[in-house]
Length: 588
Image 1 (cartoon, rainbow, N blue to C red):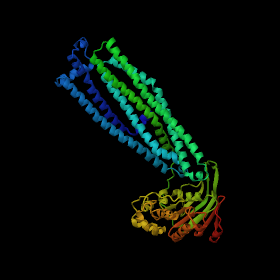
Image 2 (cartoon, rainbow, N blue to C red):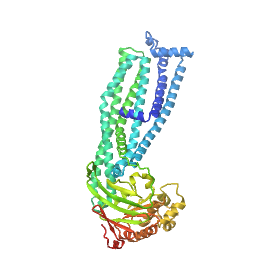
Image 3 (cartoon, one colour):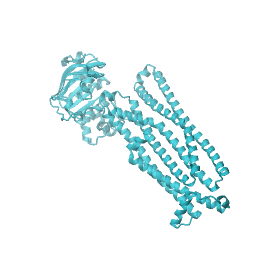
Image 4 (cartoon, rainbow, N blue to C red):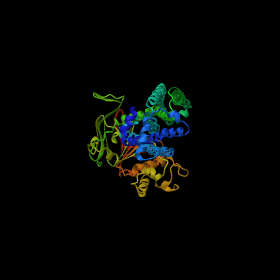
């Protein structure tokens, strides 16, 4: 019951309110059903069953009902009993509606809270942790696991509700005939104990589902991202084979879950039916209990055992789904333990330069005895990017170009040395304030299937149409956007609004420029473009030179030629190259 305790700790008010309404619903139903005994007694007596009642002392419940009617002055006629019975059922339905509504709202809130917690912790995590998380596993957590976790809350509340319902009916039945009720409860618990293994088996199936969905969706995401080279080499069948194997394992887990649930359902009914058949025979033939009492007791005991039966079913559903809750909360916990360092408090000022001073960085571990990473990328690197200049970083793959950019944006922190902004260590500067001064254009021209305006503003309502137009003009995209059907309201990717690679890249540049950054970073932004599109982008960047600082990573000669300062990274060091030698550079 760890899961139930956890939910009550997190959502105490909602859970208590729902359970209270369900408890009152059970009481109302129990009160209504308690009217059946005297009603049936009166009916059977009128039909000639007086002899059957002779010599039998009234039950505690009957005495309580007699006292109630005597106190209120109501004559206990069949019509009165039926009225109380109907009112009890109506009140039960109303309270159940209120409780189910509350539970339903809380279920939605559980899923929402888990998703928001995952997003917040993930976006607040340090970059090296973030990039190592499998996208498929995170997608599965956000979608499937959040829904299953919320369902586990629903099943937990339903389990408790059924237990409380059984408790109410048990109290009413004890007031009717306590010996018979205890016998029925003993039999009921024996039945539940016999079937407990099906619950355990279902729990294991649920855990296997959670594990397989995590691995399967991670594998699927990685495969889809690399499907082009796989198809080009006719090797997609190898990836499909692995996916089919994992999918087959998931199917087996689902089959075990289905079998456990259906077996529980199938075995509960005959066991309970056999018990009641035997119990009714014993009550009438051996114990000679009046027919009215037997019928009413049978009805009440069926209610008790049905509630316990339903509680076991809901508990089974809960243990199937709860593994998703623990898996998701563990992801949120692990991510929350990897926060980004945002301790800097000084406001950023970028008027002079960004300077790397004796910076060393290695990917891997950073122990107490120095850098012990798997690969040393930068070794005592020192270089400077003057404010208002256009600087380019070139060099072979793995030389550390992207690492330099990540250090400048503080996605990474130097393991030795410092990164200085106008002479101030970036570690002392307010991180988000500095990043708001940066425009970033990646190699991938990722545009959302939405309007040009939305792709530039990303939905930020602070930017006006004039701001969007200005950013598009600065990126050299004003003319072709104006010719699109609908202009800035054209939906990227739709017929008539399909863009070339160069046009898409210009829109991403406009996105980076709209908030008027002090530093524009281009990370291989032209590497996927044809020469003509690249030349157009370079011309645009030359016009921006001076109005902001540009830092570009590139293997392309055209982009390097446009730069004022060129640095070639190799063996962890930077070689300053004269602009005239750019024509002789070979792609790394």
